[in-house]
Image (cartoon, rainbow, N blue to C red):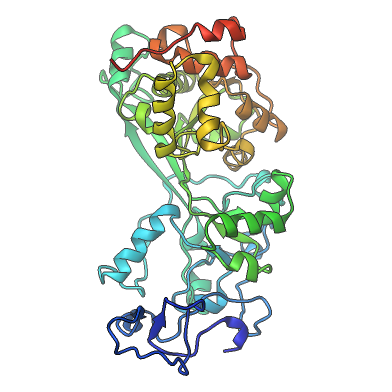
Length: 461
């Protein structure tokens, strides 16, 4: 292999006390000295072979990536996402990063602990999507979809022959299934008569909802993502490389590879009613785009309106389906405004210690995180394009950032629906009134700065 492939001349010992990460056979250190800091990779050679490839380079003639033409309407002209080194993937991969986002580390642990063979070949028999999403015009071109693979739910079946021929692993990045959704609040809505049992959408007195759901793993087309954020591709690559502590050197060394699997969570779309109606403009659509909040969504924290608004979105989506339309709730893994749960809890502490008033709501976040929000909704509408959505009749969200991102992508929103006041927990008035004052949609009054000072959360004691 050419030197450009950055393969270290084989030596099972890698010193970590020097500036260079891999020593060649001329290394002068005495590796029998137990006081010397070094790593012995001989055992791992059994799993991965002798060569430790730190990165690959685009000028290496040995690199022969599987062709990938993002935006092509024909999936075979477009080509598959290939993002593993196993088999012949080292020289043929066409995507930077690893599958499964943050769960890729658990995959590595399973291999490293001999619980999973690196040569395992997945058998996808019987795992096909139970609903065939028709290809939409939005799947073509390099503008509408830049953060997910529109053919990701079909990849193992579309490219099975190519996978065998080229000896590369091709995994799905989207999975579709059917399920029933059961939440305690839905039973209450049935009892109150707000949800009617029809045996189709609402299946029983417990309020169980029949749904189709889609899990999506992000696949970034780097030129398109850069354009969406109004920065250069080079700046995007450099930022991703530097800020992840150099985790993905191919962002720098492989400018010929244009796709990237970021180590972030994906999304799940929950569809109420006939999924075909999503792309039918004659059918009314009720949509909620919801960003993850473990504290509230799962454990019921009353510091925010997240779970109440999620429940409201689910109810309204189900009712829209019962009225002959379709409902959809899209759940993004963007915990704590994509700042993470650690930062969120630190902000909670600062809020309570400084009096927790609405006028200081965003300031406390900015003091700790440097920004108030890192969700960056510019990529969010891609899932709407995948589903073929051309208009939204009822947007079950007050977020100005989500509204602007969707409308900028050419999808009109006919009505914006705020969370009902009776569903807002008293301690979350700090959050909701601060957000309304910052630009969130409301049918009510926008508080002045002086009024925000008087809106205070409860103390811990």
